[in-house]
Amino acid sequence: MSASPFDHPFLSGLLGDAEIYAHFSAEADIAAMVQFETALACVEANEGVIGAESADAIERGLADFKPDMAALHDGVARDGVVIPALVKAMRQAVGTPHDEKVHFGATSQDAIDTSLALRLSDVLAVLEDRLRGVVAALQSLETAQGSVELMAHTRMQAAIPVTAARKIASWRLPLERHIERLEAVRRDVLVLTFGGAAGTLEKLGDKGPAVRMRLADALGLRDIDNPRHSERDGQAVLANWLSLVTGSLGKMGQDIALMAQNEVGEVKLAGGGGSSAMPHKQNPVGAEVLVTLARFNATLLAGIHQSLVHENERSGAAWTLEWMLLPQMAVAAGASLRAARVLLDGLEFRPQGAT
Image 1 (cartoon, one colour):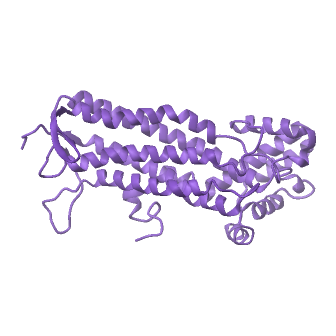
Image 2 (tube, helix red, strand yellow):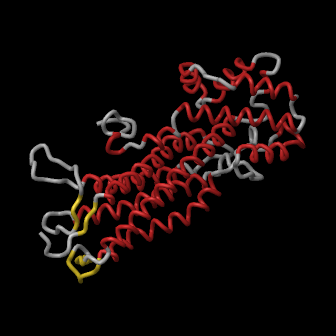
Image 3 (cartoon, helix red, strand yellow):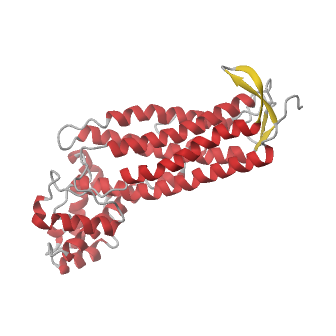
């Protein structure tokens, strides 16, 4: 048993997803926060908030920036967020007299939430590509085997004969709807967070809106008038979408596991699933993984809804809960899509009465 199966040396073979997980690594987070700070200095120089020489010094000083992870560890233990220790290290890398212009006008949440948005852009691109791949695999399966006759089951009891195409459609159509929903999800989460201490950009005066718009453009994120420091509905929309994806794949996995039972025998699975005690068995491992990850994300979704409850302008507790849950949900969705594709590539429908 492990505290996290997603990066476990062997459990990750079943439940992990190295590609998605990499976007939530400390290294990826720091790189995105450095990108934010460098772009911030550049646009502030363009608007005359800081000098061009300061922006140049910040860009040079952070080009190969590698912070001391132990110092960041101790800083988070003390401050609850990484930015005070990280900005201190950044300022040391930039050096005097330009060090005080690093992070000028921003607050910790601006850097942390914008880092998340930048990384989610890549994560959602990967998930969309995989989702389309699963839909394409289902379409191919329907073309090749859709005419195979199966027994429909309602309330776990045999009902009437149907074709495999009917079963496949019930797996494919929800996934197509999730693709359609993704653009709205992107609009909710791929936004710039930039508001300063309490969302007013008070240090930038009348330059604030112009800096914010330039910064959003530079980072490829949507500009919004009011930073969502304590408005976490966008993250909840993303979490809901992730749970919908894994839930739909879980329904497919549950169907396949039932159809693969020896007494039913309506599908044949390729490879794997061996038993240490019963060598005759071929366990439906891939299908079971889809069910597990669906239930996992459904459980975590309730926690994300708890993280909506921010007090006043910022909550340390609700925000920290979000850090704990949202990355796991994204990795679970990635792993589920990967497992679904492997499962479908080795799936063969068997007509009723076939041996």
